[in-house]
Image (cartoon, rainbow, N blue to C red; front, side):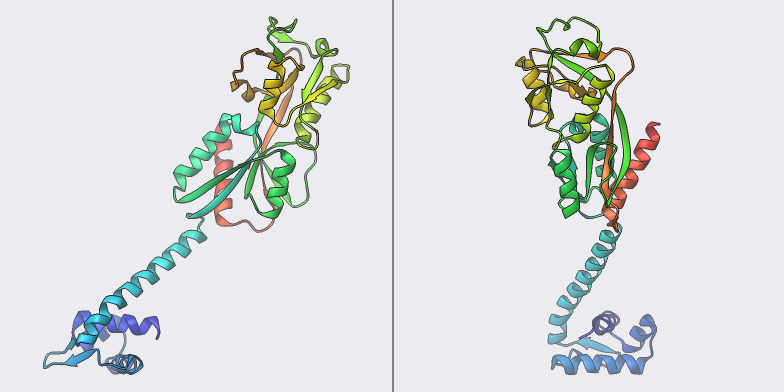
Length: 298
């Protein structure tokens, strides 16, 4: 049974006249009659009974018309859903982000803007360090990922600039420099640094070590932190000092203070990573939203 047979049947049922139904469908009356007869033969029952003025549904036809309308409605809905999916208007988008990226207000505003534009796309969020997120991106567990961009670009991944964020010094509240408005990094040469392992967050680690090197010293490796929020807690526990992206200063933990870096500022880049290969429409829409959003901020 073909969908056109169902459409022909419904047209005749609604018009109660084969000639008028043929005119409505834009086909000849004889071919339409033949198609209706073929449909009845396939089903094995008569769907119409002829009258002096046209045709009326038989009892079998009245039953069939209900499901025929549902079949056509379901078909139209299936087509509309497929078209919506092709335009990236429905589906699921998996977004990854590093712990530090989650604190950046640009990220939350961008996601909010996308949700307003594509309310029928379900978003799932996955947190991880840079290495994990790049692995998730590679195996398809996330479609895009907010990460801290370093100098290296893994194969098969493209990066889209989101923001440049200044770094700030985080000190225990009892530290000798806690009352200063700005801190010169060289003054921290004798302090242990609480750092994330380089394999977990190579960009953040290299920015901190590079800034210390520019200030004339190699940072003393102190307690390692499993994630960025833990850095602040470990500093509060007086395990050492550290540098964090400015947005992390939203973490208000008792026993820590945040200060600007004296002299030349230190910054770290936030980027949106995606696969270079053919991009699904939902992902392309998110990337375009990010492009427009960041352009409007410049």
